[in-house]
Image (cartoon, rainbow, N blue to C red; front, side, top):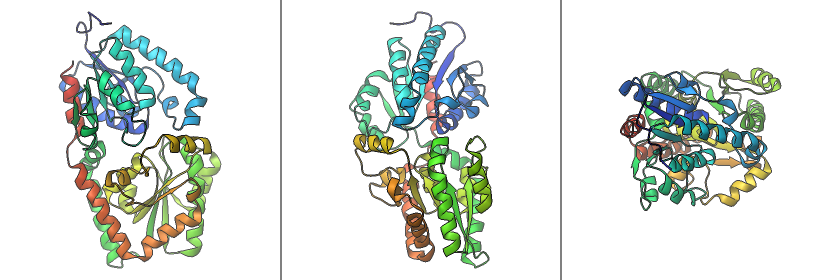
Length: 388
């Protein structure tokens, strides 16, 4: 099927970005597109970062932010209805392109629908087929018009298929580079104060994730870890990342305020402030690696969701720094290993062993070197603009 009127009328591009990190990265692309093409209409699914640059959402953003086999299954009706609404709107508006931003469980269906309508598809932040669900690689190769990869090795993975693939750089590298003037003084002052003995306390950041279900599963464990460390290491101070958009039970808010400080600002500033961190598996682990502070990866989910993950995964790691390095350079404490006594022990080891700490810093610098300094929003906006 094709649309004869796709190139007539006011040009538009449809975006589907269903999670907070996708909203941030797509927002940078929308901003550049609007600079190049001020009259271009950008619509679809996205959050506040995209809306800030004139993006027009078709449905509320929050309900799309689900993670895990069981959690998605429980809301299957919503996702089926959303797909129907979005496909109908795509057919009605005939956008010049569909930009799928990560979110493969939903976006693969949207990509196929666009392909059937002869609407070009740019996939930004490809599914991690090198970690699980390898069968998605040929699906993208068959249906996408262009794949914008955010890891250098992904170009080789998708090269055998029809769709052109380009390494455009990593969006976290771009975001941190733009905030270098803010972050570098914090990092340098922090390091100088600790090394010169001006500050005796060790700063530990707690990053419990951005999704409510993650926070409810992981934050209680992190707070128990804080209590244990307070008894064993009175020289440690704590701050927990609680995003302003986070919705969690009131008792967790009270627990945070009783034993630690709440940080509601940007995650990168908290990571720059700290000496080490406990970071929930996900995009935040790569951000922590790029900031360069040694940390421990933590994760807990429902037993069924974790069992489903173990069945489909094809590599031994969950943390992006370890996947990129091909070995465990950051300790992973998952499920039964995500316990206060284990987490406290890992942090204590970093505090007590300068050699271990500096080796961790060196390993993390290798991740930054691997990703380079390209700004992907520029490359992706150019790919999309060529289709408009």
